[in-house]
Each structure stands twice: as C-alpha cells, then as structure tokens.
Length: 309
Ligand code: KPL
Image (spheres, rainbow, N blue to C red):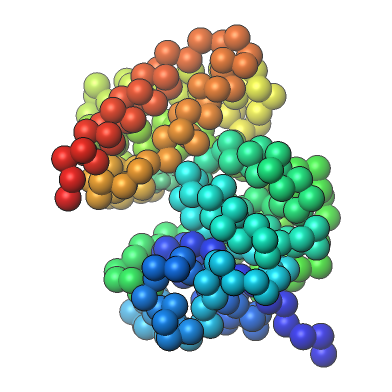
C-alpha cells in the first residue's frame, strides 16, 4: 500500500482546523504549520477539537514552525485573504517545483501575486461553504454542511492527490471551472459582506430593511455588469436571486466581514470589493458603488483599529 500523502496546513483558524481534522480522519498525514510565537510550538504537537452534531472529536497533530527546513510537498493554505502571500512567503524556502499549493481563502487577487513571485509552484484554488466557527483556540464547531470545490483554471481532470479530498467526510468535488466558482462566491460576498459590516447587521436585515434591500439590488446590478464585461457571465447570471437565496439561508449569520470589523481585525475588503474595482478600472468601467463600499469599509476598519480593544 502506498504511504499516505503528507499535507501541511498553514492557517490554524476554524477552516484550517476543520480541514486538518477531515484530512487526518480520511487517512492522510497532516502537520500544522505554526508561527514562531504560537504556544503550541513548544510541545511539538497540538490537539484540535471538533464539535459536530452534538459530538466532540479530538485529534492530535504534529506541528512545525514555518521557519523550519524540511520540505513541503502538499500545502493547504487556509488564512485570511490578506495573509495568503505573507503566509506562503514564510514557508517559501520549503517549497519547490514539486510542491502542490491549495489556496482555500476568500476573494481574488492574491493568486496573481503568488504566481508572479513563485511561478514554479503548482497552485490550485478551493472554495467552501462549510459552516464552521471557532469556540476556543483550536476548538471549533462544525455547525453547517456545505460544499467544497477545488480546481485549477484550465484543468478538467483532477490530479492524483485529489483522492485524499474525495475521501473527506464532506461534499467535496473537483470543479471543471473553478474561476467561475470563485467569481460567484466573490460576487455574493461583495453584495452582502460590506453592507453588513457598515450597518452592523445580520445578513437577514439586508432583506428585511427596505433601504438596505435597495442597496443590495444596486450593488448586484453593478457587480453583474463588471462580471459580465470580465467574461464571467455564468458566475454573475441571476446574481440578485443568488444573493437573495444566500441572505435567506444565512439570515441569522454575522458575516465574516462584520465579525472582523467588530473584533478590530483587518478585513478582506481589498480582495473582495477592491478586486472588483480593480477589474472595472482595467476595463474602463465605472464602479461607484463597489468603490464606495471599499472606501467606507477601509475607513470603518481603520477607525475601529485606532480605538483599540
Ligand atoms: O460567506 C459569507 C461570509 O460571511 O463571508 C456569507 C455567505 C455572506 C455568509 O455569512
């Protein structure tokens, strides 16, 4: 029997802990990559607890400091969008042209930066709608089932390593057109997340508050125009209906951007609305509504961070 593949997971937040647990459960070797200041580094291993359907499961993982030297063959990056490039840079010396890098992060834009800086790595993108949140450090609740898609632009047949992902105890598929999936997620996030952060409201209020519902509508129209002009017709088709369905399905959620702002963390706005505005500028299209979201969220986030905890 072939030795199990060895995955290194970079980004031990809720999503990283979930996928590390799922990969180990499916029989893969899995190591968590930790920053130098992480207390778990001192023990050489860490324990992840996953609560799901009323049951708690704990799994122990070896940890490795990013600065160590041993090579990495299969890397899963599960950081926030703004941390993807610095995170890959922190293990750049451990990667080679044999390395596979799966990017499971929100937004768009960092992919181009990575390909420019480390052009020989084999990059894949992933997107997930698994509902998961952190209850304590490395203790998570897997609250809702979703779908995970992985792919590489232009690649229709999955690579061998994808068998590890097919074995996960979740719905995980190879995406024939991952760009479309990433754009669809981006479009939905751009219509929901900035408004919830700016108005400090749960997702559902975007449907029940008439003024906010009008703003969602106008944003969707602008995003549809930009996406269509960028060649992403299928991703933004019926965007209003798609967004309405997500708002209904996640009515009680506080969006990830609202949570980031409330916690005084950096937001992913530059990789969501910021990306759309850059695409629109490149195409010579106006994007006043998304530009307004970008400026307002940046300003709000700066104000909250300046106030401190
Ligand atoms: O993906 C999300 C997020 O919060 O980032 C949505 C779909 C808006 C759910 O809250």
